[in-house]
Amino acid sequence: MIISNYSPCKGFVLFCCYTSNGTLYNYTENEIKEDGKFSQLLYVIDGTGQAVDENDNVIFNLKKGELYDFKECQKSKVIFKYSSPTLIWVSINPIPTKKYFTGQVLRSGNHIINGDINKEQNIICIKGNMTINDKQFKELNYATIKSDKVANITIPSGSEAILITR
Image (cartoon, rainbow, N blue to C red):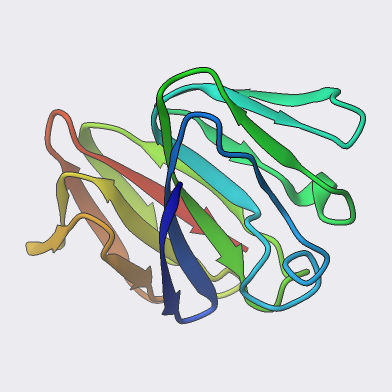
């Protein structure tokens, strides 16, 4: 069984997916070509598993709390296998597809991110909540960091966010 949520954002799609044991999930030909459908960055919220190629070679061992970059796999078939009863993840799907992001997990604490005129920067609350410049953000909400601004980010214990940059 697969339950998913596809949320278009400015410059990317936030894709959340819950899968149960025994379900195989793979990128289709359309998903690796169409804007917003290729899951470039993948963050595992819960569960464990593997991302394998068509020959069953392991690309990544997927673990809870880790971020994986699949940009090198865009022209390949990727199959997700699960070693836990469920695998829950959030992925960042770039628009346009080939304008890739770099990603960094931000865990509890205070973080300062300076806007950069040469970069597009977004911070996504993946788990729990966060505060950016005194504004509260809930799980699966995001903020764009403007080029002339400084983002003072507070992430409480047990919460996590992802900074995406391109």
